[in-house]
Image (cartoon, rainbow, N blue to C red; front, top):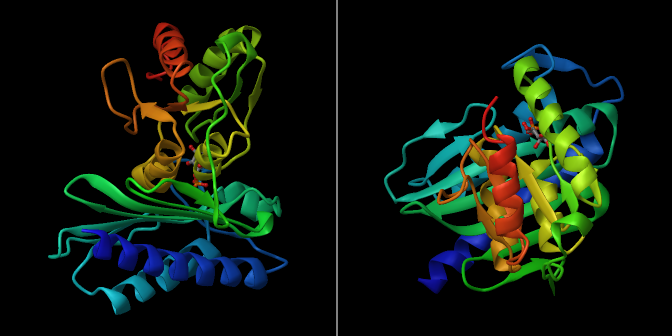
Length: 265
Ligand code: IPD
Protein backbone atom coordinates (compact mmCIF):
# COMPACT_ATOMS: atom_id res chain seq x y z
CA UNK A 1 0.00 0.00 0.00
CA UNK A 2 1.01 3.61 -0.51
CA UNK A 3 1.79 4.25 3.14
CA UNK A 4 4.41 1.51 3.20
CA UNK A 5 6.08 2.99 0.10
CA UNK A 6 6.07 6.47 1.65
CA UNK A 7 7.69 5.18 4.82
CA UNK A 8 10.32 3.20 2.91
CA UNK A 9 11.13 6.20 0.70
CA UNK A 10 11.62 8.48 3.68
CA UNK A 11 13.93 6.00 5.37
CA UNK A 12 15.91 5.37 2.17
CA UNK A 13 16.35 9.12 1.62
CA UNK A 14 17.52 9.64 5.18
CA UNK A 15 20.00 6.74 4.98
CA UNK A 16 21.36 7.85 1.59
CA UNK A 17 21.70 11.49 2.66
CA UNK A 18 23.51 10.61 5.89
CA UNK A 19 25.83 8.15 4.18
CA UNK A 20 26.47 10.71 1.43
CA UNK A 21 27.57 13.39 3.89
CA UNK A 22 29.71 10.87 5.74
CA UNK A 23 31.43 9.67 2.56
CA UNK A 24 31.91 13.15 1.05
CA UNK A 25 33.14 14.89 4.21
CA UNK A 26 34.95 11.94 5.74
CA UNK A 27 37.00 10.70 2.79
CA UNK A 28 40.56 10.34 4.10
CA UNK A 29 43.31 11.99 2.03
CA UNK A 30 45.28 8.75 2.18
CA UNK A 31 42.34 6.45 1.50
CA UNK A 32 43.66 2.98 0.77
CA UNK A 33 42.35 -0.44 -0.12
CA UNK A 34 41.05 -2.37 2.89
CA UNK A 35 40.42 -5.67 1.08
CA UNK A 36 39.94 -7.21 -2.34
CA UNK A 37 37.05 -9.37 -3.51
CA UNK A 38 36.72 -11.25 -6.81
CA UNK A 39 40.14 -10.11 -8.06
CA UNK A 40 43.07 -7.91 -7.01
CA UNK A 41 41.44 -4.86 -8.67
CA UNK A 42 37.97 -5.48 -7.16
CA UNK A 43 38.54 -3.36 -4.08
CA UNK A 44 36.82 -2.39 -0.85
CA UNK A 45 37.86 0.66 1.17
CA UNK A 46 37.35 1.21 4.89
CA UNK A 47 34.73 3.79 3.84
CA UNK A 48 32.61 1.22 1.93
CA UNK A 49 32.50 -0.87 5.08
CA UNK A 50 31.79 2.05 7.44
CA UNK A 51 29.07 3.45 5.14
CA UNK A 52 27.33 0.10 4.87
CA UNK A 53 27.31 -0.13 8.68
CA UNK A 54 25.87 3.37 8.94
CA UNK A 55 23.12 2.54 6.43
CA UNK A 56 22.17 -0.88 7.80
CA UNK A 57 22.21 0.50 11.39
CA UNK A 58 19.78 3.24 10.42
CA UNK A 59 17.50 0.89 8.46
CA UNK A 60 17.42 -1.58 11.34
CA UNK A 61 16.65 1.18 13.87
CA UNK A 62 13.60 2.18 11.82
CA UNK A 63 12.47 -1.27 10.69
CA UNK A 64 14.05 -4.10 12.68
CA UNK A 65 12.00 -6.82 10.96
CA UNK A 66 13.27 -6.14 7.42
CA UNK A 67 15.79 -8.19 5.49
CA UNK A 68 19.11 -6.73 4.33
CA UNK A 69 21.36 -7.49 1.37
CA UNK A 70 24.47 -5.34 1.11
CA UNK A 71 27.51 -5.32 -1.15
CA UNK A 72 29.90 -5.42 1.79
CA UNK A 73 28.32 -8.47 3.35
CA UNK A 74 25.10 -7.39 5.08
CA UNK A 75 22.77 -10.37 4.86
CA UNK A 76 19.71 -10.66 7.09
CA UNK A 77 16.64 -12.80 6.31
CA UNK A 78 14.03 -10.57 7.95
CA UNK A 79 10.41 -11.42 8.75
CA UNK A 80 8.44 -8.45 7.36
CA UNK A 81 8.73 -9.44 3.67
CA UNK A 82 10.58 -6.19 2.92
CA UNK A 83 14.21 -6.51 1.87
CA UNK A 84 16.68 -3.64 1.51
CA UNK A 85 19.30 -3.94 -1.23
CA UNK A 86 22.24 -1.66 -0.53
CA UNK A 87 25.39 -0.55 -2.29
CA UNK A 88 27.16 1.87 0.09
CA UNK A 89 29.48 3.07 -2.69
CA UNK A 90 28.66 2.16 -6.27
CA UNK A 91 31.69 3.33 -8.19
CA UNK A 92 34.25 2.44 -5.53
CA UNK A 93 37.17 2.89 -7.92
CA UNK A 94 36.00 6.45 -8.69
CA UNK A 95 35.73 7.12 -4.95
CA UNK A 96 39.20 5.69 -4.35
CA UNK A 97 40.70 7.99 -6.99
CA UNK A 98 38.70 11.09 -6.04
CA UNK A 99 36.57 11.09 -9.19
CA UNK A 100 33.02 12.39 -8.64
CA UNK A 101 31.08 9.51 -10.23
CA UNK A 102 30.09 7.45 -7.22
CA UNK A 103 26.76 6.96 -5.49
CA UNK A 104 24.91 5.36 -2.63
CA UNK A 105 22.25 3.00 -3.95
CA UNK A 106 19.37 1.84 -1.74
CA UNK A 107 16.32 -0.14 -2.87
CA UNK A 108 13.47 -1.75 -0.96
CA UNK A 109 11.75 -4.78 -2.45
CA UNK A 110 8.80 -6.92 -1.46
CA UNK A 111 7.58 -10.15 -3.05
CA UNK A 112 10.28 -9.86 -5.71
CA UNK A 113 9.21 -6.34 -6.74
CA UNK A 114 11.16 -3.16 -6.13
CA UNK A 115 8.91 -0.62 -4.37
CA UNK A 116 11.39 2.19 -3.79
CA UNK A 117 14.79 3.18 -5.19
CA UNK A 118 17.17 5.97 -4.18
CA UNK A 119 20.52 6.77 -5.83
CA UNK A 120 22.47 9.62 -4.25
CA UNK A 121 25.56 11.01 -5.99
CA UNK A 122 26.91 13.53 -3.45
CA UNK A 123 29.66 15.05 -5.63
CA UNK A 124 27.08 15.78 -8.32
CA UNK A 125 24.62 17.17 -5.76
CA UNK A 126 22.03 14.72 -7.02
CA UNK A 127 19.42 12.50 -5.42
CA UNK A 128 17.42 10.32 -7.78
CA UNK A 129 14.37 8.58 -6.37
CA UNK A 130 11.42 6.53 -7.53
CA UNK A 131 8.42 4.83 -6.01
CA UNK A 132 6.74 2.10 -8.05
CA UNK A 133 4.00 3.62 -10.19
CA UNK A 134 4.76 7.22 -9.20
CA UNK A 135 7.47 8.33 -11.63
CA UNK A 136 11.14 9.15 -11.13
CA UNK A 137 12.62 12.35 -9.76
CA UNK A 138 15.98 14.09 -9.64
CA UNK A 139 16.17 16.53 -6.71
CA UNK A 140 12.35 16.78 -6.75
CA UNK A 141 12.09 17.44 -10.51
CA UNK A 142 10.44 14.69 -12.59
CA UNK A 143 12.84 13.01 -15.04
CA UNK A 144 12.07 11.32 -18.33
CA UNK A 145 14.10 9.26 -20.81
CA UNK A 146 15.07 10.89 -24.12
CA UNK A 147 13.00 10.06 -27.20
CA UNK A 148 14.56 6.91 -28.69
CA UNK A 149 17.08 7.52 -31.48
CA UNK A 150 18.03 4.87 -33.98
CA UNK A 151 20.79 2.61 -32.62
CA UNK A 152 23.28 4.34 -34.93
CA UNK A 153 22.72 7.65 -33.07
CA UNK A 154 22.58 6.25 -29.53
CA UNK A 155 24.97 7.30 -26.78
CA UNK A 156 25.41 4.03 -24.90
CA UNK A 157 26.81 3.61 -21.40
CA UNK A 158 28.41 0.38 -20.29
CA UNK A 159 30.85 -0.99 -17.74
CA UNK A 160 33.39 -3.74 -17.30
CA UNK A 161 33.76 -6.30 -14.56
CA UNK A 162 36.86 -7.03 -12.53
CA UNK A 163 37.67 -10.47 -14.00
CA UNK A 164 40.29 -10.59 -16.77
CA UNK A 165 38.54 -13.09 -19.06
CA UNK A 166 35.28 -11.19 -18.73
CA UNK A 167 37.00 -7.88 -19.49
CA UNK A 168 38.57 -9.29 -22.64
CA UNK A 169 35.18 -10.45 -23.88
CA UNK A 170 33.47 -7.18 -22.86
CA UNK A 171 36.11 -5.21 -24.78
CA UNK A 172 35.45 -7.40 -27.83
CA UNK A 173 31.69 -6.67 -27.63
CA UNK A 174 32.45 -2.93 -27.39
CA UNK A 175 34.89 -3.16 -30.31
CA UNK A 176 32.07 -4.45 -32.48
CA UNK A 177 29.39 -2.13 -31.10
CA UNK A 178 31.28 1.17 -31.16
CA UNK A 179 31.16 1.77 -34.93
CA UNK A 180 27.42 1.00 -34.86
CA UNK A 181 26.43 3.66 -32.27
CA UNK A 182 27.07 7.37 -31.66
CA UNK A 183 29.59 6.64 -28.91
CA UNK A 184 30.25 4.67 -25.76
CA UNK A 185 30.56 5.97 -22.17
CA UNK A 186 32.17 4.13 -19.26
CA UNK A 187 31.56 6.34 -16.24
CA UNK A 188 32.24 3.81 -13.47
CA UNK A 189 28.96 3.50 -11.57
CA UNK A 190 26.15 1.30 -12.82
CA UNK A 191 23.67 2.99 -10.47
CA UNK A 192 24.48 6.43 -11.92
CA UNK A 193 24.45 5.07 -15.49
CA UNK A 194 20.89 3.80 -15.01
CA UNK A 195 19.87 7.17 -13.54
CA UNK A 196 21.52 8.94 -16.47
CA UNK A 197 19.31 6.92 -18.83
CA UNK A 198 16.35 7.99 -16.67
CA UNK A 199 17.39 11.66 -16.97
CA UNK A 200 17.98 11.51 -20.73
CA UNK A 201 21.75 11.99 -20.41
CA UNK A 202 22.41 8.62 -21.98
CA UNK A 203 20.24 6.93 -24.60
CA UNK A 204 20.91 3.47 -23.23
CA UNK A 205 23.02 1.41 -20.86
CA UNK A 206 24.02 -2.24 -20.71
CA UNK A 207 26.41 -4.37 -18.69
CA UNK A 208 27.12 -8.01 -18.02
CA UNK A 209 27.92 -9.26 -14.53
CA UNK A 210 26.35 -6.69 -12.22
CA UNK A 211 25.09 -7.59 -8.77
CA UNK A 212 21.57 -6.80 -7.49
CA UNK A 213 22.89 -3.97 -5.28
CA UNK A 214 24.39 -2.25 -8.34
CA UNK A 215 21.10 -2.13 -10.28
CA UNK A 216 18.13 -2.60 -7.90
CA UNK A 217 17.45 1.12 -7.29
CA UNK A 218 18.58 2.36 -10.72
CA UNK A 219 16.38 -0.20 -12.48
CA UNK A 220 13.24 1.17 -10.82
CA UNK A 221 14.33 4.78 -11.43
CA UNK A 222 14.96 4.06 -15.13
CA UNK A 223 11.62 2.25 -15.55
CA UNK A 224 9.69 4.97 -13.75
CA UNK A 225 11.30 7.48 -16.12
CA UNK A 226 9.95 5.55 -19.10
CA UNK A 227 12.78 3.12 -19.90
CA UNK A 228 12.40 -0.57 -20.55
CA UNK A 229 14.86 -2.77 -18.68
CA UNK A 230 15.67 -6.43 -19.23
CA UNK A 231 18.23 -9.09 -19.98
CA UNK A 232 18.55 -11.42 -22.98
CA UNK A 233 15.55 -11.58 -25.35
CA UNK A 234 12.57 -12.79 -23.33
CA UNK A 235 14.42 -12.54 -20.02
CA UNK A 236 14.18 -10.04 -17.20
CA UNK A 237 17.20 -8.02 -16.17
CA UNK A 238 19.56 -10.08 -14.07
CA UNK A 239 23.23 -10.25 -13.07
CA UNK A 240 23.82 -12.01 -16.40
CA UNK A 241 22.77 -8.97 -18.43
CA UNK A 242 21.29 -5.59 -17.56
CA UNK A 243 19.93 -3.39 -20.38
CA UNK A 244 18.03 -0.10 -20.03
CA UNK A 245 16.73 1.98 -22.95
CA UNK A 246 13.57 3.76 -24.05
CA UNK A 247 10.96 1.82 -26.03
CA UNK A 248 11.93 2.00 -29.68
CA UNK A 249 15.62 1.55 -28.94
CA UNK A 250 15.45 -1.22 -26.36
CA UNK A 251 14.66 -4.16 -28.69
CA UNK A 252 17.14 -3.00 -31.31
CA UNK A 253 19.93 -2.80 -28.74
CA UNK A 254 18.91 -6.03 -27.03
CA UNK A 255 18.91 -7.95 -30.32
CA UNK A 256 22.33 -6.62 -31.27
CA UNK A 257 23.80 -7.34 -27.82
CA UNK A 258 22.43 -10.87 -28.02
CA UNK A 259 24.07 -11.39 -31.42
CA UNK A 260 27.36 -10.07 -30.02
CA UNK A 261 27.14 -12.41 -27.02
CA UNK A 262 27.15 -9.60 -24.45
CA UNK A 263 25.60 -12.00 -21.94
CA UNK A 264 28.55 -14.42 -21.71
CA UNK A 265 32.22 -14.16 -20.74
C1 IPD B 1 30.85 -1.40 -9.99
C2 IPD B 1 30.35 -0.22 -10.78
C3 IPD B 1 30.90 -0.26 -12.19
C4 IPD B 1 30.55 -1.55 -12.89
C5 IPD B 1 31.02 -2.74 -12.07
C6 IPD B 1 30.45 -2.67 -10.66
P1 IPD B 1 31.20 -1.15 -7.33
O1 IPD B 1 30.28 -1.39 -8.68
O2 IPD B 1 28.94 -0.20 -10.82
O3 IPD B 1 30.38 0.79 -12.99
O4 IPD B 1 31.15 -1.56 -14.16
O5 IPD B 1 30.58 -3.90 -12.73
O6 IPD B 1 30.92 -3.76 -9.93
O7 IPD B 1 32.11 -2.34 -7.23
O8 IPD B 1 31.91 0.12 -7.51
O9 IPD B 1 30.16 -1.10 -6.25
